[in-house]
Length: 210
Image 1 (tube, helix red, strand yellow):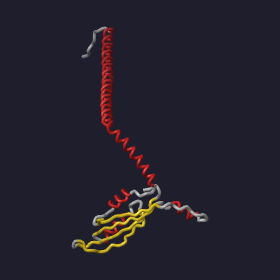
Image 2 (tube, helix red, strand yellow):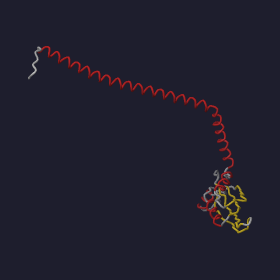
Image 3 (cartoon, helix red, strand yellow):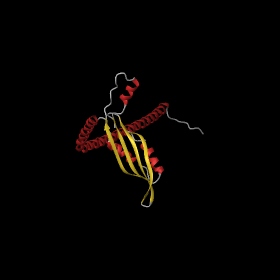
């Protein structure tokens, strides 16, 4: 059985128009709602970013306030650095004794202990090449160390191998050269066999160097 509409065509057209209008309004509402959600999300994120920036700025201000009392130490450090540079310039080639003896202590291997560590140092002026001297000799004199001396290390070891290891370690220290073991003799130490040794090395310090 077929459904037959007895409504006039004008009323049918008006109903279809109303349905299309409702559908358009619904779609428009959904689109507007989506845009409102996006806009609201952007506003929320912007607000969070502003709060985070404000918090970081407050932390920076607080740290800067705490750092004010320590600024005088920065000035003092700059003064100390300046004085050290002046002292280095005045010393001109004198070895850095603190560095030298500290490095020697760091290179002592297990099984070795030191009993004496001394250094002799003589400052010498570089001689100017005499007239008629070969160019090669003149270059050698101009590059030779302006200061030189000798480092003497004495101590005890449990084995000859420990002495050899110590000599090898000393080659890693800047400012010393010609490292040689003068002797390593066996001795009795509190009922235990040990080896007394003496090591010498040359101190060759370039002018203005460590």
